[in-house]
Image (cartoon, rainbow, N blue to C red; front, top):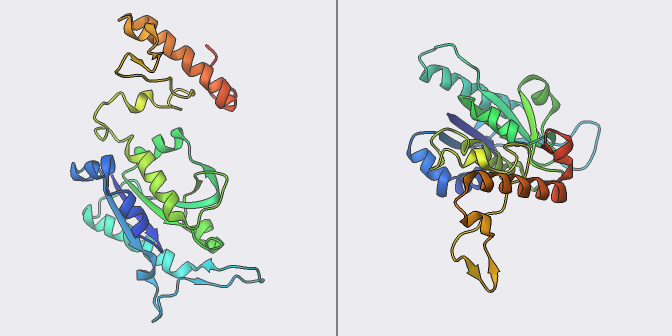
Length: 239
């Protein structure tokens, strides 16, 4: 998989994605992550990428020209690198508070893509023509506003890349995560068995794997009901 991030602050996602599991995934050749400065595609001498909105309102809006130029160049380079072979077109994703929520299901679908181009919103957002004619999806990581979309882009990339086969050391790790089966994850314990009078549940020490699995499911269901009851009404299960 290749991921290109277009941002006014490319150092933000580059720093976040150059450590830990994301770093190892790139070193193993499982993913290529490139963080680009959108100003590179601005054609004026000051590399301006934004302007005041028509109709009047506070703030600035990212302009069409550099965004279209950047995405079209990245798509062309991808075609050239593949020898002109026709295949799935890169998916262009815009990070914006007005987008659809990032979910485990959405991250899983993006992990199957061969090329993602992630556009980071900034200021008051982007010219609507970018959304209407260039972007495939608008994505939000939550109902709040960040200083820029580069932070959100790093979150999306992390959520997606860890689902690529081979990225996690244990292939079952992602399958057991919260949201994988519509429930939050069950509690975990490790050594020592007893700490300050708090003991690991005896069931986890029993060696009875069927009983342990049943206990974990009960715990996951109880936590979901307590913390995120909305999940039980949108794909979660009481069974």
